[in-house]
Every structure is written in structure tokens, then in C-alpha cells.
Amino acid sequence: MNPITVLLADDHAVVRAGFRALLESESGIEVVGEAKTGREAVQLTKKLLPAVVVMDIAMPLLNGLEATRQILKAFPATKVLILSAHSDDEYVDEVIRMGAAGYLIKQTSAHILSQAIREAHKGKMFLDPSIAKRLDDRRQNSRQSATAWRTKGDVGLTSREVEILQLIAEGKANKQTADELGISIKTVEKHRQNLMSKLGIHDTAGLTRYAIAAGIIESSRRFPVE
Image 1 (cartoon, one colour):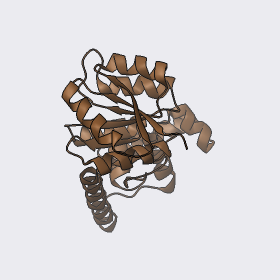
Image 2: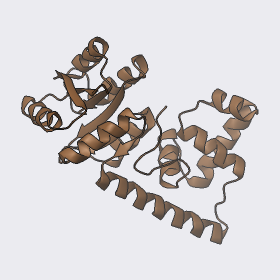
Image 3: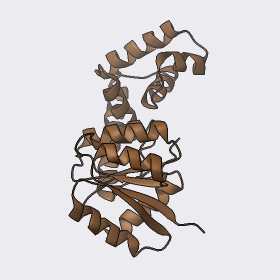
Image 4: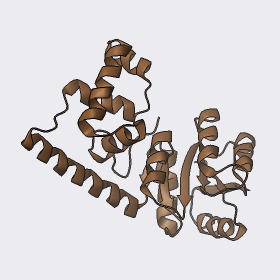
């Protein structure tokens, strides 16, 4: 069986060397290149076509998130794992929305990193255990809040609104949502306005976070990535 080819992208040589050493001790994984800038990561992905790119966020010339967007758009067969010192919810939510294969923190163990690479190669998402737990806690809190709202009669999403919320969270534009559900764009816009009014959320990012936290789209450690 061919090894899983990996490109390491981090602006610190010591960090790259450390992760290379960790991965070289794992069977079935081969580090085929290293990039010290986001732009170089995109260029090397084009040249080497690695199965998985392990990407830091704080990269010079082109940040890791934008480099990830470009890689996923140009090379959809390549999976990108974010490996960063930052684990703020905003970063995690953005990574999930853009379709990256996972998010790990730099303190992770060699076992977790290799497991994440193998899962990404299978087309599944893998979140660092600490991040997965935080998202699950947030989802549970959201569900409890939603139950309380329904009990009070203050908020209650219709089935159609839940459908539209899921499509919004999956990155679908209004026209795509309308085509998917067989309704007009104006109807989608109206449902979208109702959603924002009921939830007190006024942007797409907020609706996406709510959908993830509420369990409308999967927030567990692994799920398929298109």
C-alpha cells in the first residue's frame, strides 16, 4: 500500500523538523515536502500533490487560512489539516466552514497527529480532542437553551427554517438553497430573515456557529468532507 504523502507548512524550521521526526516514526506516512510560507505551501501542493497538508495559521506572505482556501479550491483531492497554537472558536468555526479536514493544536501528541492524518486521508474530519469536547459542550448548552426557549414559547424554528439553516451552515448561497428546496429566492430570503429575527443572529457566520452548536450539522470529531 502506498504511504500517505504529507506536506508540512509552518514558518518555524524547528517546528517542521519536530513534526517530520514524529511522522517519520509512523508507518504508512511519508513527509514529501516542507513550506515556510503560505504561498510556498500552495506552490508545493501544486508541484507535489500531497494527500494531506498540515498547515499552520500564522504564516508569512499568505496566512494559513487563505492558503487553505486556495489549496482546497485548486486541489480538491488534497486534504488540509490545520495545526496551530491558536484554538479560539472563531478559528475553529472558520476552518469547519471552509471544508478543511481538521484542526489540531500544536501541543498534540504524535499519536493524535498521525491519527488525524489517517482520518483526513479517508475523507473524514478530525478535531483535537480538547476542541471536540468544547464544541460538544457548546452544542449541549445550545440544545438546553433551545429546549428552554421552546418551553417558554419564545422561539421555535419551523421544519423549513431548520432545513434552510442547515443549507446556510453548509455554505449554500440563496440561489442554491432555492434550487435545492424547490422554492423561490425571495422565499429563501424571507425564511433567512425570520431565522435571524428568532435567533437574534444577524450574519451568516453566527447562523453557522448556531447550527454547529445546536447539532443541526455534525460537530463531533469526525464527519465526511466533500
